[in-house]
Length: 131
Image (cartoon, rainbow, N blue to C red):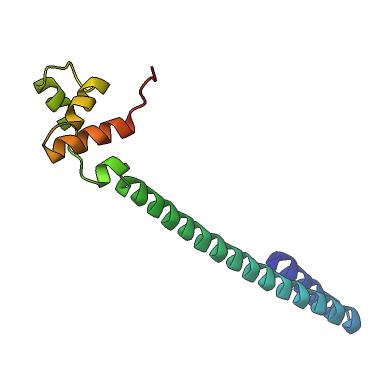
């Protein structure tokens, strides 16, 4: 648009040189209006670019926070500090191939509180077939 405004200013100068001041004034006003519109359009573009940049920054920050939360988030079993494989080791020591319903039943009658806790947790987290 700047080229158009400068071209119209040149035409206005030529019209003044030809002693046509009214037409030259009208063209000069038109050139001025175009220059103002060009400045306004540039301001709007700058505002849009700033808005897009702000939105992009906010999006990146939200994405970073989501990724950080996903890395930080643990399974509920991990968050209570259970040691994986303790009940399996107990069952193998007691002669079973691994954790099973029979081992859990035997462990529930154990005098050791931690063994009863592991057995109760095992039964609560497993789905057994009903007889």
